[in-house]
Amino acid sequence: MTEPQKGDRVRLIHTSDEFTKLRSGATGTVTRYQKDIMDEYDQLHVAWDEGSRLGLIPQSGDQWEIIE
Image 1 (cartoon, rainbow, N blue to C red):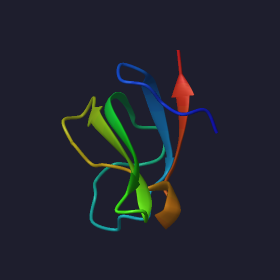
Image 2: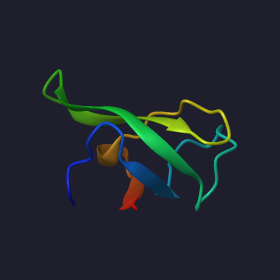
Image 3: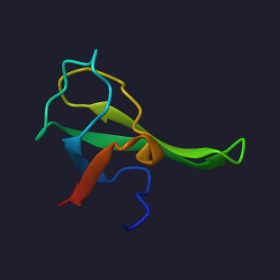
Image 4: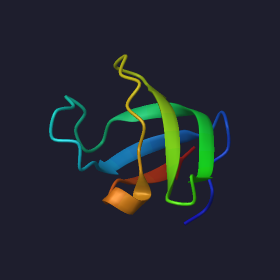
């Protein structure tokens, strides 16, 4: 998977967060990508178009794709 950069547009494929209202297909703009937080996981921070600020963690099964 290509490492996302600030400003990239992304589309949500899947999130393991059962409490979010975001669904597959939601789009947003990357605000930050943190690698190896405490040597445990990465986190993708996204400003979702619908207003959510849910961060994605690939190690927990969250999936996205970079779009143009």
